Length: 492
Image: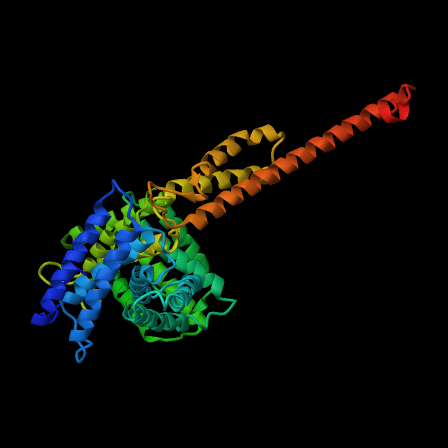
């Protein structure tokens, strides 16, 4: 990404015009992203995509005999593709090839961090596998509509992700039904402990409870009975930190450990980590305070975005978060550690805390990208209102329905007011027809169907109640010796 500390080759003079054009395109994309007073329009995004592809083809023509070369042109090109990808999602074209680029780039980062962390759940990998499979299907469907160079690039990136994914799947492939639930529980505990270590107010009572829980689990492993983990001084802490680092190294070296070994290793990691953070709650080496504050701010902002995603997210806004995270991630040394300004590495607790923020932030971006609605931001206000309306109607249905059709008036009025916004069956924004019409119409039809079901249910209940009341009246009349009133037709 931009300002990456990685060294790159000098730019070939023939590539200078391409670099200049790409910089101009990137500036246009960033202006498009920054303009919050107007919706991002499909035609603007498609035009800029075409300009990027033209530069890609020009670059490929120059690099016929040096395909693996990497320089600043590639860095700027990557940023253009990232912005184009996020812009395609912003206009609701999530199921088209350009939109895949940003998600796959994020998945690659996330997989690398899962591998480095050496603890994850099978369901984490299942979700990623599902998305990569869908992306391959999308590429096949888009072959006639997009430039082959883009499709080749996307397939290559998916291939790289699948190689790492396969390694991770193999590393936990020996988990048995007996040990899988315990392994999942310990992964959850380790994540909770990492989170506790980053809170503004350290939750000592929560960590105490976790330690007690770990001791109970540990009792089921006799071979760990004499394992010393209690921290009484800094020498013990350094010893445990070394032990933790050794466990991480072993986890990286073993491709497929037995189930019991997997559970035992992560149990020891949980116990050690709990002891370390109890001794030094929230400890961060002051030399790395700047990185800590940056990563914490990014994590907090992304969590806020996740809570209000459907109402406030413009996918292109995620570009800045990605760029800042990549810059910090790429500044680490080959062995993955963080360095201070003088080149000294961070201690274990500082390193793992910073890595936790990195992993969590990439995971949040992954969630935001993969849960993005295939609806243009221009239609999101309508889409969100319909989602809320549908949710309310489903809650009414779960609660037993309504007692009278009149209770549906507010829902019907809101739904009709949205339906009346359509022009010739389409939702228009000015003279534009934004993408995502099908998704919005489908939501609206769901709402109409729910209202109809609730109304029919209420009418059925009314008819049933009237029939019961009439039957009761007839019983009373017979009991009083009064003959039931004959129907008018029979009286005649």
